[in-house]
Length: 278
Length: 111
Image 1: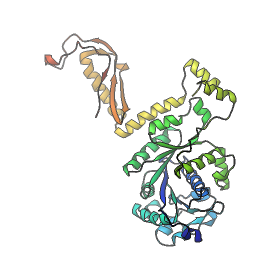
Image 2 (image 1 turned 90 degrees about the horizontal axis):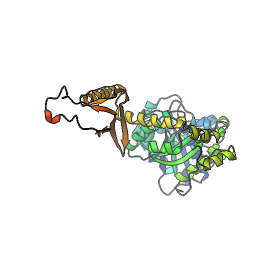
Image 3 (image 1 turned 120 degrees about the vertical axis):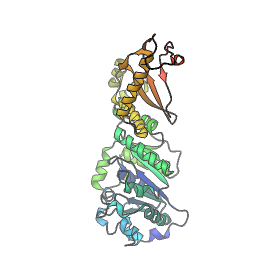
Image 4 (image 1 turned 90 degrees about the vertical axis):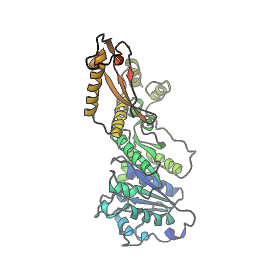
């Protein structure tokens, strides 16, 4: 079903495997994977997004592709179908393919070296392979980081998320992967009045390279509700942030990281300029 | 703006700073895998040792583990009320009796 594009277009270098992880659940890994995947595809790259949350699949619904699943990633890994049969082509965004998780298995059906072999085959077909890592640091996590060249750690400005991110960063370093950080769900007003950790605080604590700041955005819920790509939503600040992150991942290092600002009143802006608040 | 302004005036800081401090401690303790109980025991022992030489305010003694340049440092900070003039109870060796030395801060490196 994925058809011609899968086999014909790539001929040059091998693709890159990027794992999107966080330790803690519910911080926005799946939204991040779907959005960065879509944005990279919009940049003209061949992109595969793989749902590694075996038994609890969700990337399919977030991307609005849940009705089109026939085979899944486990079928492809175990040779029950051809790789291209498990790839669902996104109809809205050219060059974007989803490998859905299996819903009936558990994480132990796959071993890390099977993932390495599977990704080796995907590298020949795609420029980018994004692995949506499950929460936790058990087998699902091990499977996801085993084939990864790069890692993106998603974290929100709250204590539990940052603590888990720190743990995951340690585990990634142990595998010689230097992760990059996305700080998600920033509420600028709360940061301004000192009730939320600022991005500098989080970077201080985790001391890894920042690759993007994403503001808390109602459009994320709307996009998930409808299954439409967030990056195609017109007035989504989060969608815009993810597009910039994708460009940065794609080697456009000169794109500056925008700090989410409060949009409420001019007085607040003046106040911040005067150094009142933070 | 007014929130920030009032906080500037009255010196009340937001909960963000608290979060940062708590996190930094949590991460250090996570890495050392040392429990609060053990730290309390350590604090008790340190208080006992220092008390042989100095009169200290036992309640205001602070025991911190701080992270500096990749290393963790154990920092003990205690106000000294006065030095003890008599010989320490435990130690018999007069060379080790340095009760006259006055120092406000007592610190040492761990690891």
